Amino acid sequence: MHSTPLSLSYVVTVIGKTFTSFWGHFGALQFSISKVHLAIYGGIIVLGIAGFCWLLVKRKLTTFQGQALGILFLSLLGGVGIYVLLNIRYIMPMGRYLFVVIAPIAIITCVGFQSLFPSRWRNPILILLSLVLIVMNLDILFRVLKPAYAETFLVAGVDQPQFCCPTPEINGKSTISQTFISPKNNLCAIRVMLSCKTKRGDGEITFVLKEKEGTGKIVHRMSYPLKGIDDFDRCCFIFPAIRNSSGKEYIFYFGSHSLPAGKGVSLWYDSGDHYPQGRMLVNGEPFNGDLYFQAYCFTGKRPETDWQGRREVVINQGWYVSIRELQLYSEMSKEFREKTIIHEKLQRIEKALKNRSSS
Image (cartoon, rainbow, N blue to C red):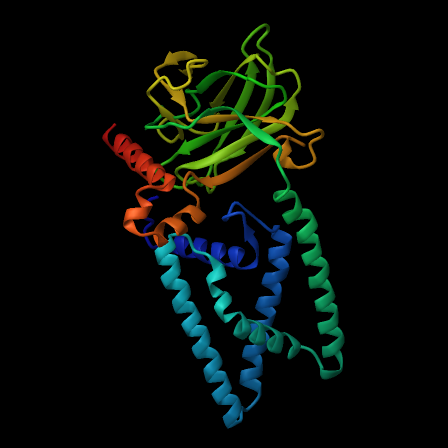
């Protein structure tokens, strides 16, 4: 969405995202395996490289071994070149482009890892490592992948997909609100889209859902750290389903006690009245337009995953135009891409960025 200057923090970010997406970043980079899994994989890689380097220093190579090693490093160099070219083309650093040289990576890691142990312990250690990896991958399958790809049973009761401008910023003295009417029972999620010119490193925002009628009691309240939030990130605030929500009017608002004036974040909204059943408010006062937002209702029998409202959670769904869409778009001919919904979404982003820069 925007260019990032080359710096040490940027290089560290690229390395981190490459490593994560190499081992397990799924759903078009929307969720990944846990930090424990990544730490185990990282430890194996570090030990393998250290052992391989120690082996090169310790052992004198034959002519054949030297030639094989040269071919190994040439293939790695070619794979890294392909990785760099593809990531420049597709914007986001993705480790899966290193899969073309997964054989050299595996050889270096395994040879180096086993060289760290005495010969009599090598086979038992490698067998134990294999068992650990099998158990870990089964754990990933059943505790990460299965829940993430399970049917959500969510339907969009309200969908306001238009946006043109960023709202006034959310900070310690300013709140942004939106009223709406839930058309179905089991209201369980609200999704909005954030506007921030630079990636956030600190602070948090608070989401509050209230009943608009009667006592106006608070139904749910959640805080979400802004670290790592990018421009046009869509955040879904999920909560246990409200059973008798059909036909009731609600209001949700965002505020922050940790963001000072001038350093807050904004939400994207549209100045047109695209959702007549509700209205946007700034500091409690009516404001022309409606937020870009979706209100989801659960249609299943019993929530079993976070997406279904098993508990209060905030899920960052990433960019408005996903990585998968950007990949498909870049591979289309100019004539065909201009007829796609992806082209419309990119045009909408371009217009919104122009409006923000001129405001």
